[in-house]
Image (cartoon, rainbow, N blue to C red; front, side, top):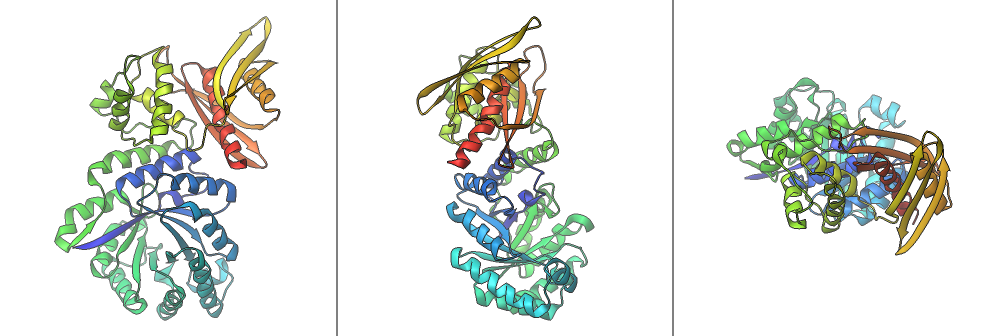
Length: 460
């Protein structure tokens, strides 16, 4: 059987499509599915993107983490820097090699592009052993020139050549023949990427993989071949064509539903996961008597694989919520979304007291802990949430600009859980935070601290 390797491009979608937490959750799903590589876009904000890659590196152990570069030397240097903490790093040099692409995107003629390919791959190879050259418009490039570029990349240390048909100009048999021709000339592992616009992406990919390619790029809800469709095709035809892959098919439907939900809900404040509501999830009912072990099993049944540290945080929040009401699947997933953070909890909420009424100014007394020290703040304001935020600022001795604040109900009923989203601006960058509670003021405070802890983690 020929082993096929799958590289997923879901997280290369536009910069603003997913929040930090959503990207982390998607990466967890992809790692759990057994994807061979998880791709990220080019580094734009070094601090924020570095935090994302570092957070992914803490739990992505089996999959390759691939970061795009290639526009200039700075982009290559940034990719090398953020991948330093990743167990299996890859730099992806993405270039357009058609005449219009070279001239209008890269401002280079053919000779200059050949020289740049050698330079870019060499620079990447100095820091990272696994270097991919991804030709974004391979089917529109001059074939002889494409072969020359591949040859230069291989000489410089390229380990994977990916050929893309982003314009869907070739039918499956023609594309397979094209890939075989370039692969035989390059002498290196070859991957393919096709877009779903023509409806033939998976068929073209499988034919190329059958003949000469060994890597394929997929996605969930993005332009590349659908991971779900490709998995079905591999499951149905793989044995017939002597192909196998490392996908965990038993987890496929649940994980893709989860990623799809995130994709469809990425413009909302709530990070609650709803994977379709199986009968088991709808009947889930936990209360204050449930132990850590039973909550851990419930978390696993929802498809989450949390670290022990995250699990303890979830259980602590579960105890707080379950002291007031029973916890079902939706409530538990809301707790997971709120508590399973990817940065250390520098500031921790200990307690708060709010006084509010239509005949008085709102007051808030908030107690936080940091490194075992109890810190308290007191503030007055026109509303209870404003007062709580001012009390936190008094503790910090610093004001952060509140870029956005939203609240909404997560579940239904008079004891509904509330979700709060806070975005703090610091030095021109936005830091989002989410909080979940049956008390919307408590949810707001927790959301503020979630964003604050990301700022502190990055600064330190």
